[in-house]
Amino acid sequence: MTNDTISKVKKKKNQEKIYLSWEKVLESVNFLARKLEHDKIEIDSVYGIPRGGVILATMISHRMNISLRLFKCNIRKTTLLVDDIEDSGKTLSEVRKKYPDNYIYVLSSKKYSDEYAYANHSYYFYEKNQYVVFPWEYDALTKEELITNEEKD
Image 1 (tube, rainbow, N blue to C red):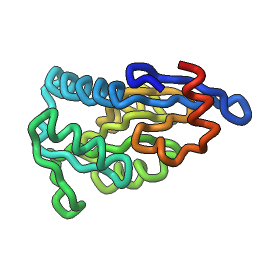
Image 2: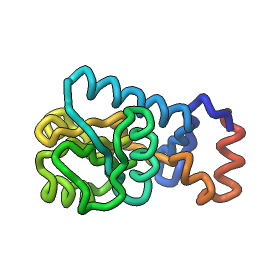
Image 3: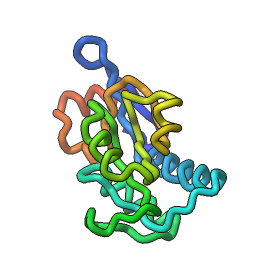
């Protein structure tokens, strides 16, 4: 599998899997940094919702040169909350209730809508109803899935 593409493979019931490369994740982090700067949003720290959000939060903290919050008790209004995917919406619904004034960044969302994002101070990079496999999840793939994906490149 090449690192500079998003590979697509058919999944059961015609649901498409998107294999996200590290380069695309970095592209999303750079997009977010530019967008926050453009929108003049004051963020001084970032917290990653476990598990996938922690990886993104670390990347964002390096890119934006801001503090990485490791514990919920350290979250402030100026802390960006990050997760890798919004699937059912349950986790982020709870987060939005507890931290209604915080900005939230989600790499991929199946629940995305412009009105919902604006009302909840949310940013999304991918807004697709597809199954996203992140680079940090590749080890969880079956041998057949990896081979099939390599053949598509």
